[in-house]
Figure 1 (cartoon, rainbow, N blue to C red):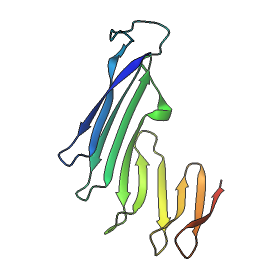
Figure 2: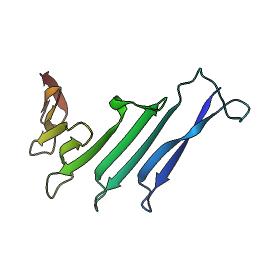
Figure 3: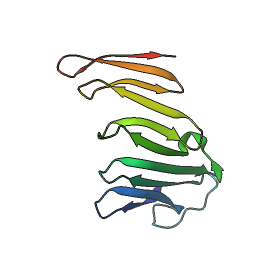
Length: 136
């Protein structure tokens, strides 16, 4: 059995503010494993929050064999619609990609736009999602 140790860091409000892996893989006898059979993989995560607890920044860096894994490395900045907890947009500072959201009067997400296209969501009178359609 191989065990990878993770460190978790919390602020005074018990919100996750960071995580990371240790540089050493621990084996069955609680001893470091030195083997070429395992891809050495590390990651670090840092999060920042606004005054009402919404995430405003989430940065993750992932490396495998000292090569950055771009699918899992990002620097997301979150913006909210004024006076609400509704997410307006997410900007990835690493890629320049942006995601945006729209809501109905009940607060249900009705549109999500990203580099893959647009997803429209439809809700019934009891605020249950009845249909989700993606457009390229």
